[in-house]
Image (cartoon, rainbow, N blue to C red):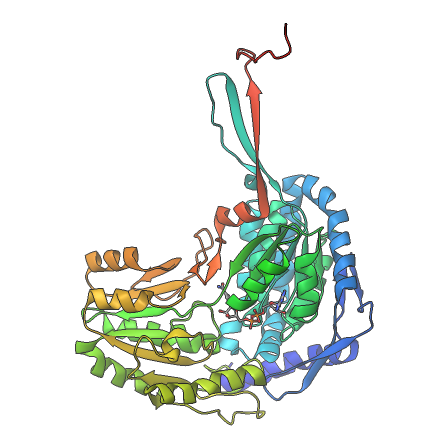
Length: 509
Ligand code: NAD
């Protein structure tokens, strides 16, 4: 199929799905039933392509969260106590259901978020992988340690913490929510999910698919709504034992405060201002590909994006010249068009935020080498020109603040020590990327970077068993492999006496 045919095929696939959304709207999934809000209130979700209303969405409040949390509470013990092999089978069936609808999920995600189809085509398959990977760990999740003492045999085991809240953002919502929900369910927890209000469409589909696949009622509940309403109520609910949150750093801080009264355990995956450091001995062609990919894919709306390029001064001119050509050639367009590399940003408010950094860059004395304005794309939605800012210093706002758009800030450095100092001089610490031909230097820099995840001579490549998470203001905790279970489970210690130890005798005359 050529690109024009594929574009048409994506539109044709989306049309009946959109008609259903228009007709039925989006409700909550509570205790296995799709229901409106107790208040009857709704809000609109609009497409970033043309601002068209996609659906009216139930606007959840404290009452709806309470019902969902109670349903999750009731479902918890039967789900926890179900044999692991049975839970594993159900979670694989959810993965099957996701795979069967992968193409529908891809087009809906594009229309709801503005992400380009070339990146969303595999999003559902990755989500299915999340379910399969953690399904296979259902039994091992409870494994513990044996730590024998002289007179006691000590063993530990893990038990699921209880009903948990999962709060997710809008950038790649389907994949991200499964990344949190799948390990929670595999651990034996039940879930109340509050998806982002700007991208509720595929969360609705996920809850329906999970139900159809045989997930028992109440095990996964989805309550739509506004962060400060439904989200806040979820973080404050006493039946919810932990909150897994992905979103902005300031929201994470608010959630921590909101959850304090009920002593919520929190896991935060927050913002980033990630450096990609290119040394003069790097494989420049591969480095260039990775630099462009890691900031201009996914509209730059990506927590792990390398939004700061630190380039060694002696090769900066040549590298920037090539970079300028590549950024100019990026194809901005309709997200369903297979040729599109950069689609419209999620929302007018986000577009305004990204565009505000053009003036900020200039006011601080940096230069805009490419882009620097909104873009009139198909549908007239929230498009922006891919932007490259050069001549920046590490202390400028464009080098410090997360823009979360297709916006790259270039900062030159003289040597290894300066590269490390600049890389670490932000409040964030999510990822770092290092390009060099000198393996010793690569390892030295990896050791010195304050970041939770570091790739040497590579862009971000997902590997499910490895720890995913950030330092400093980029987060608390790690996901992936067994790390996810540390969050969703309590470690329980059991001590068995050999009957040989002396017990102090009190109250004996
Ligand atoms: P956001 O913090 O505005 O919203 C995220 C979610 O939190 C939404 O569902 C929202 O409704 C909810 N929320 C907002 N206020 C709340 C409150 N007071 N109580 C409870 N819930 C509340 O983030 P966003 O704009 O949707 O997403 C973009 C951000 O997410 C960026 O900063 C990005 O870096 C970050 N992100 C991080 C990762 C990671 O893994 N580190 C991954 C993706 C996105």
